[in-house]
Length: 211
Ligand SMILES: *[C@@H]1O[C@H](CO)[C@@H](O)[C@H](O)[C@H]1NC(C)=O
Ligand SMILES: *[C@@H]1O[C@H](CO)[C@@H](O)[C@H](O)[C@H]1NC(C)=O
Image (cartoon, rainbow, N blue to C red):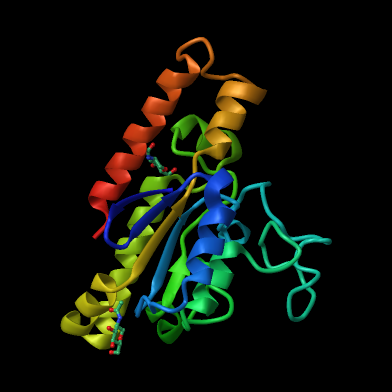
């Protein structure tokens, strides 16, 4: 886990659950987060992929079978995502909704959403293969969300919400998997360590544009 800015967390998926265990265990010092905004891949997508054409969607059993209602809602898990646990531990809400859900209310948006898209990677090749939302699109949606929040509560309160929000990014494993190990799309171009540097540069540019 790399912590670049006060409230921006970047997670490589392998470290994900260790990080959460740590965060959830340190409840003695409340973070006082106003909202949780999440970007990334299937590790943190609560169902955005159900709202645009991609084959990469968790809309069938056994996904979601242990959720209230026992229905697949688009999460690539039987139950909650790690970011749902984080959201509820922060006192925000039990399930962090997908931004693209057309029934999402302004009130629900204010305490946070996920912009993540299962199958995405930091490398554009990864996103193109599965036709999923790249990080620029996810960041554009975040900007749109902030405009919506501003309309609802005014710019002063919107600024306060964003300033005290937690930003959570989980991405990179699909890039390594598809482009280095499994299909090896980038293997001729980069060594593993060069490709890691390439991905780290992408991460840096994401961190720079987040508030
Ligand atoms: C959280 O809010 C409480 C009550 O306002 C305050 O006492 C505490 O210092 C805050 N904690 C952090 C980490 O900001
Ligand atoms: C991200 O995806 C959008 C929509 O498919 C595309 O227009 C844009 O060029 C992509 N951005 C990058 C940096 O590849």
